[in-house]
Image 1 (cartoon, rainbow, N blue to C red):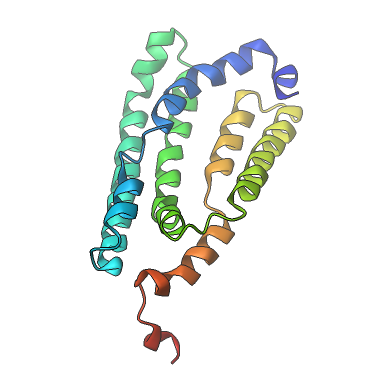
Image 2 (spheres, rainbow, N blue to C red; image 1 turned 135 degrees about the vertical axis):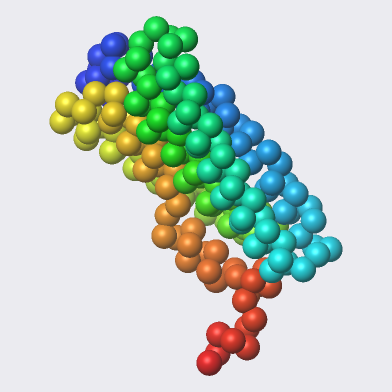
Length: 179
């Protein structure tokens, strides 16, 4: 439906920009989640999770900055400089996505994944709904960019779940919360 609203030119612009995102998406955590899950039991959970969060934020920032800087070269490869701004906007994807790495690791370590597929479904539905509305309003390839960025954005339920898991992961001293 979105492709029909956008037409082949606008959809193709987004596809050129998205290739880099989809290429890096499978490995952008560089094993950080697996490391947090594996080493989480033998080390101080609070220190491990804080260090993991710092690494995740730095990693996401580095990947985002690298893509932002390489955007003109990638657009030059395609021979269409309009792709530059789309890639630069999509570079925020990794900065946003890396914020959720540690909460995801906590949930996976505790096998608290019940209902995760439902939340993923709602995020996908939200991503496509935003893209559809913006495409109908004439935003072109930018409708898909905004759909991607909103779809990866950490939801309030992730923050709530991570907040309730802080004490279980050792991030907060339970005696401090009662005061």
